[in-house]
Image (cartoon, rainbow, N blue to C red):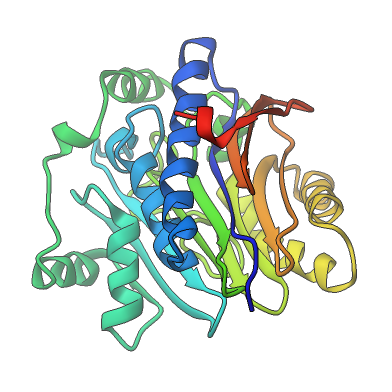
Length: 314
């Protein structure tokens, strides 16, 4: 099968402030270009989504890897998932510390263990065994993250209220289909500021933070993790696509269901087995970018879609 490759990435669905608007947009464009360069050379969708998410993890504009936020104890706990739609192979990690690229660690779980997810102390021990580079907390967090944490320490709010105020950073992710028709997804996050120690959101949960199946497509989600888990958002989107809905309609229906049923907001990107794709959200903003053929598409605000020739892209 010779399928036209496609990649879509997101940098999190939340009320992205104006001072981060340009860096967020440039970041997702860079990540999409990085992932697509792999697809254009005949590389796999798995390799492409991992590479794209690594770019976002290395960019302090986003809440993943180097832009991660602090939990209630002032530490960084990271979650990630990667999934191969060809055989439903999946690797996920949660509550890992001091690792700059959790998505690559998640792929190690997929490829080098018989398990689907590792968490906490065991995951960190396995990372050491795999010689996955560790970095200091200081390297991962930004001054903004520290100030945000100090502010949230002054008063108590539920995680739901914190997210639905949309003032907190969120997840990054990527989906892709390669020239062989294989789809993959990848999602990575630093979580929510001041979260309880040990709190795991939707990002590493199969069917919630992401899902990929060659028979249908791939999804990566972002938003209020507890709400996303309750409705298994990623799998719900693919269920609607299985029933014949377009990626856009399937995404909107799933996001509306989450909003109406559990009052949760968020966003997602999806690509179908035929290469159709969508980037949809119910928050104020979501930085996203997609490459389909010779064109790079991107947006930040609701209803917004810009495009430029791939040759002119960053």
